[in-house]
Image (cartoon, rainbow over the protein chains, first blue to last red):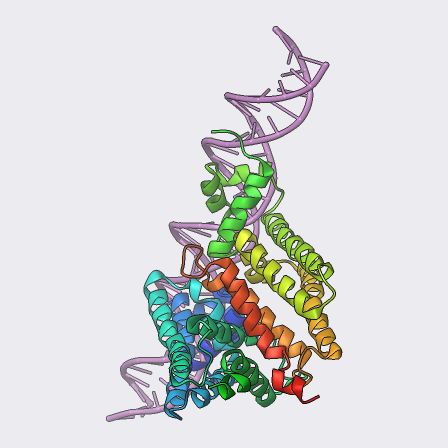
Length: 198
Length: 198
DNA sequence: GACCGTTACAAACGATCGTTTGTTACTCTT
DNA sequence: AAGAGTAACAAACGATCGTTTGTAACGGTC
């Protein structure tokens, strides 16, 4: 058995937090997952909450970077939205445990850290809102939809993916992104007859 | 102070389970919420898990009854979908604590009861799938959408409402149902130009 | 090869958990 | 008025929690 690194510990913690939840995971559970005793985990981290903070921060950074890339990939709202959706799906599926912990266990954080995560999430969601707002201003998107509400709907679908998606299932990531993008777009896009009427 | 009924206890449990989560709620917390000691709760229920089972079952029954009413309210897929969405929103907003516990804390149930809830949820979601499938067969809905995926998208939006909706906020329940119904419909409905082309 | 920091174990700490026990006080029934 | 049943308290049970302590084995560095 080779010795463990701090990253090994955090990764295993993410796995257990995602599967059973933060409160349902004990330090002895985590030790068992790593093949060591519960108390030995403290050679790598200084508290259980530090593990949660680390896992959640990693996911937060991934989402933030993904959104930044998507926004600068184009200046057309329609393309930006496609990139946002594709990036989000990639993050969720490539870093499932962290994403799942980020989405479901952030409430277990202390007030101090939870506040930071909420702000991070707000910034992330603001990208979706601004893209849709810009699309409406530009005339590409329908003006009779509430931009904030539409953004919330899209994010709701994205955030729920980890709850049902099976990597070995019937739907592959690419066609998921494709169908979701079309579903979302048809909710905000102006129809052809509307455009013809101008 | 009047004495407490079993229903009072279950209602308070739902409140705490929804706000803090099952594992983060102790029997002493629950007692505190009710103005009694933790041990005194056992005059009303026989275990902590029984409380969770009760809360989750109540929400499950509400969702089930709502779906049944919606399905028998019409035999047009488009109207049935509207009724399903409206009913779901009403259940979530009128019984928020139970719904929230149902959606987020079912994983804390023992294998035995969790299985039952999963089946109940599957039956509920099957209504959405069949409505959309029927709509495609009838020609009202687009045939290029994956019915199962579309149903999942709609349910994702519905299940996320409890995470962001503020009763005293900017959006009232009726216009939420309306906008959501229009958003979902435009995702599955055939466009006018498609219909014209026939 | 002596030294030092790291990683792990074994054992225990106090706190809190779900739950049980024994007892008191209240309310309803007869 | 007597009795039964319920709802609450006060206190404790064993189990488990996050964490700490002391110590032994290990790896890399001068």
